[in-house]
Amino acid sequence: MTSFISHTSVDCRNAYELSEWWKNLLGYVDIEGDPNLPGHEECMIRHPESGHQLLFIEVPDEKQVKNRLHFDLRPSDRSRDEEVARLLENGATQVDDQRNIRGDGTGWVVLADPEGNEFCILRSESELAASQ
Image (cartoon, rainbow, N blue to C red; front, side, top):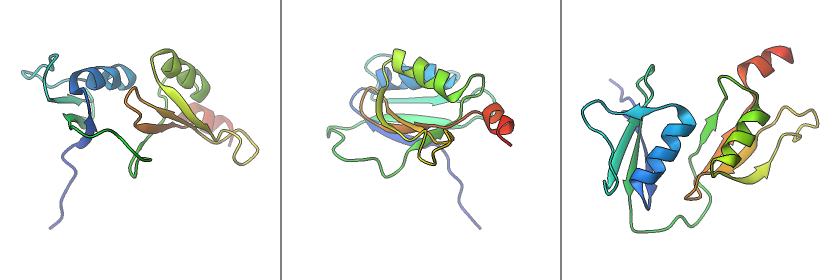
């Protein structure tokens, strides 16, 4: 017998604000019958098709070091660079640029959400297909 991942939890200072930010980034929605509201200490969002869930939980301590676990995101309807620009306009900050790590532009960009949690933006599926 094995276990399965129920959801992914993200520690944060403001569960509502951060869940709203990620909901916009990922196209996730509130759990039906359990809307997230300002002041909630735990806010769950889910992908409307796959059902994957993210739970944002308020904790008293600040983020202090690099994440040991992070999301690698692949844009579904635009290029990597277009997605990076969109996210920077929406409050992400750029932490590192690894687009040319191999010298051919196939790498990634490391961003951070408004609370400093790092995540990577990879090339889209269409960019991958075009390079083969």
